[in-house]
Image 1 (cartoon, rainbow, N blue to C red):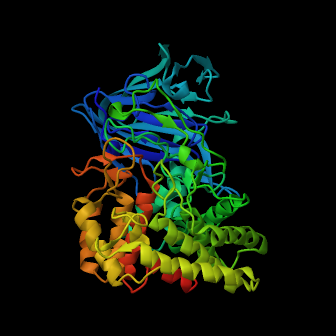
Image 2: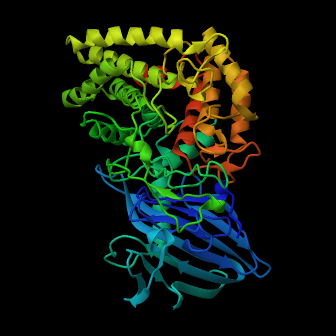
Image 3: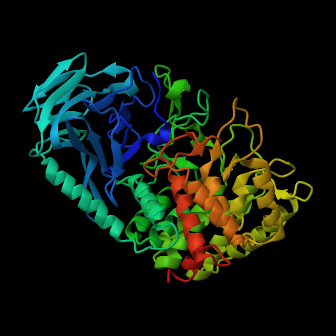
Length: 599
């Protein structure tokens, strides 16, 4: 059985969990009771044993689809010779409170209306618990259906029947008739939900959220849509941003580069905070900063945590064949055990941005953060595992050194803003300046004509594109100009598509182009003063979006989507690139905006 293209799936979210809907109308991914829970619908990873919620309209194999404007509500139109059906799929949300600004109703809703003529509808609900390992047993309860060994329940106004673990509903609808199926995954509601009201409320909630942003600049439509995706990937209980709602979508079809991305990385934390505040979502920015601070109480920072702020033990699921035969399927992520010094820079950068914009960083929060600046002042000369999480010995990665410099620099600037004149700050300045000099001496290879991946290496690494974006060097510094040209010459596998590195990382096979780096190329070109080139690259990258405007982590040279999906950091880098093109100044637009206090 063939697998649909990764970027053909629609993304639904209630900010507590997510669902992916295939182009034929089948929901093929849903984790309960939250983003990182059991994938009770997992046909995305196994066409034979993964669960699914299929919806078919006789006479139409694949509908036309779109998102209702400024929402994550999917509208699908099924045109047949006999009639037209309009389907609205969504995870229901409503306005929340200060603690949780959006409230998940914990209901996946599939609402079907016959617009004209007559349509024949078939719905099959076939979840499997344990990531597809075991069928469920259905029983009729109070006019609905309940599944054993899982919190799932189904309410539908059509008569249902059960066979081999599948709950099935069929109907013939005439013009003007509507039916709906509600798949609940939380506590039973106090009273039956009205699908029409759920649709109206969900649309209003997303529209109200989107309306907070008054951004009308460069790439406004893509920016607004990407902001919605990021909000959909933010966990309602803690404010954590997951990298993607999926696990083990391959970076190479049929290969082993399959990882679980349902975790919160601290990578580009400042960028996320800047984007949220710049686009009018200060409430979410504050929640995210508080989540970051909450993980700073330990002695050392881990590169990623669960949506609840805990660990991420990794294991394999051999009973799943994996997307297009890509094994192993993994849950959990061993990278949580690595030492990644860039983490410190991202979190301190975010804290500085937050205080510049709000002035709200407290003494208690600063006390937690300054301990980590002290750690980096002691350990900046040590190797680490690096941003790309290569599973090998620690090395002196240039990006890690630059981000350690960011940690020290932002710590010094925060100390100045907060009036901290303790003796340790002078030590931070000494370490920061020594590290800056070392990176320029050992991180740039004149013969290669580029900043390189690690000290003493000639291998390239696209993560060094962030050097001007964090203020380590001006964007038009000759070394950065040379680096941009060398990276494009050596790492570009298609128009605007960059590999992240050209080194042997110890794994078989070759991954695709890394879209985060491709969008960061746009920002680096803007700061280099090469705006026409930046515009061209940005336009090419917009052309690679999936049919619903969503991006995966990577792309093959032929445009095939690879990796987990939709990918938060791709959409975040798109926002950064667009805002930099819109600002087109001599400084990175978002940091310059923050320096002015958000004015």
